[in-house]
Length: 90
Image (cartoon, rainbow, N blue to C red; front, side, top):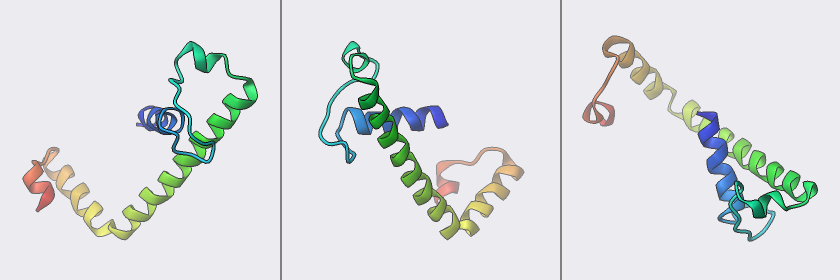
């Protein structure tokens, strides 16, 4: 879900300092975050979306690398609708 992914990426940037923006630890829902300048908030947004694009590219590469498995899972899900973790790992 894109909302969850965006919130996670924003946490990585704002709370754990995992970006080129540098070490920072601020809850983006806090009053402290709201007191930042628009320029700073824009930079944090840019870092968040940059991280999302990097992760999107990595996921895309993994899906392409394992396309046969993805198709196999999709086929099983169409047939059964649900699969167990054991079936998934098999």
